[in-house]
Length: 288
Image (tube, rainbow, N blue to C red; front, side, top):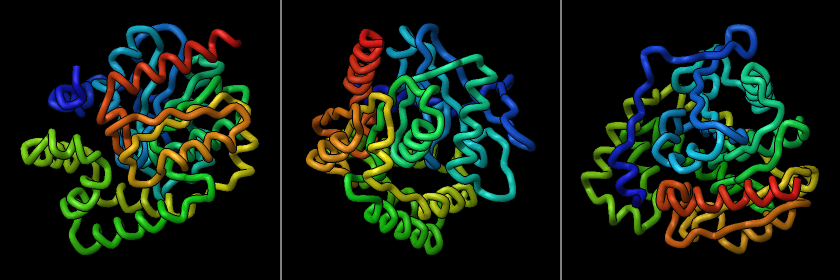
């Protein structure tokens, strides 16, 4: 099934009996669990909600136990006065895993949540079996481009609101090929879905949180978990060369380049992305 067909089946709704787990004072996280077997935890960035993962991970759910959840201050999870730091998001993730009795897990992170995956692997190495970083927001030399892009997004939100932000974001997120395939109906349909599941306040808070993120080569060097960098060759932020150089900074790093894919390659080629993840997890498991 093509990713175009997957997008046509996208369902971002929450069940009436939504499940939540308390992770710290005043914070409950909405979560979903699908499948059985080795646990894989899917990490959202600030533009995603947990339901989005469903249609892009259907094959993985047939072989693994998939956990997805909304970050605090986003989606159906609790909203608190101040946007959590990444350290607080790490604490939430650990508490979620504890509640689900998961000792260690693979992580799949997308865009800004690659910071969360990296920090989780640094702060709790015993809880991370391996991680797949899809479209990392940091390159081998840092995050300057990401911060410049986010400042531009914030200016767009300030002047044109959430619809203007979507129009700014869309051609940067999707590959040229997917943009052509979706056409105007896809653009308008996804705009409706996007504006229905997020708020202006959540977007601004999340983007401002990301402005203070940073990445240094020595941080990657401290990650012991097997790490796979997955980048589309039409990624706005990280080139194939940058992906290779970033992978080399991790002690147990590797990389995959997905042809004709953009910043979030699972959107462009869900089947190809899941095959890459499956191969990575199975190989790490075989070595364990």
